[in-house]
Length: 135
Length: 337
Image (cartoon, rainbow over all chains, first blue to last red; front, side, top):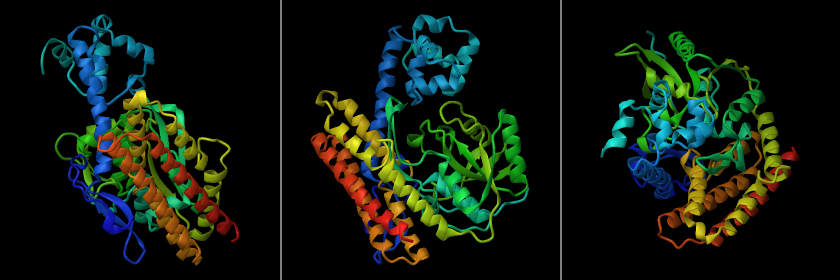
């Protein structure tokens, strides 16, 4: 990549930062060039974020219908998957999966709920409010 | 509190960046590209049985931690690693070091670092940075941080940094803190370069494991050709994930291939071998091809180009061929020394 070809697409996802790329200058020497982002890179990042958002929205619908617990929604909302959440909780995946059930969630101990809410960086009360009503 | 004078330099990759910035503080100035090359960090690996968010692990560089280990052993640098059972002790030890004017490298989770743009925060637990100062301000205090993937130094509050250092799960940092305790007066760069290039070529060309190196690229190429058109969303997620690992996570562009080309260029000067120059150009061309693959994938993801698995598969097959030639030439050149 020549220095003149380093993309400067001002992508929103970089949040105003510039990242370092390696490019070849006119004399053929390598140098570090700051880039304001590349559209192609942003496209695949947005794709990954959209996928999390899609799974979260889907879970939220089911939470509101009483078909799953807020745990599943917040897991996707916080860009986690079952493996990541289970490892953060320090419990087996099947137990986390079990906590996705609305009925099981209601019977969870206060300690367990607090542990989840800490991981999601929310207040325990938010579990309740997300079940009840529109945000 | 004394102010530690720490020179921050932005780099493409976090591990090479933190390490070279730390080493420069201790008087050893080597470039990021040199650190990357000497630690034989370039690779390609497709590990389908390790899943991240349901997607297979795809790596363009060696696993986290390997760069520091390999570079320090090649150059005879002694690095002290400290891990902690309790986060309280880990934070105290960090503050003690900073109080003595001793910057330290830290392993952290990107997700909890407050200065990261929201869109970039993912559950990646092996992000490297250097903490170089601590000030007791409001609350529990604030850390001055040289995060090599950022243009300038940044700040992180106590609670966030604590969370980022003591996150659990895959590749949990366990508060990992590291710093050099001994650096030889004159490091033998030449010997390190030759040994690293030769070892790296062997991995890329002759790994017994068929998912690693050039054969790994060929494997993924064949996999993409066989994608079932009915699973388009899933297929595109796989391809997008691959491009993210290649470009987004601080690779310097082209899945670290430009960084490697820069290393070969520098090696040509240090070893006074002109024949390495054209090989550096070959790696630049290979990086450009990876960028083309990323661009085509992104267009398909955005729906600006018709999804064409065969096209992407062919691109990868050609890249594999180019890499095979480049590493073979490099290998025969370096083994003659």
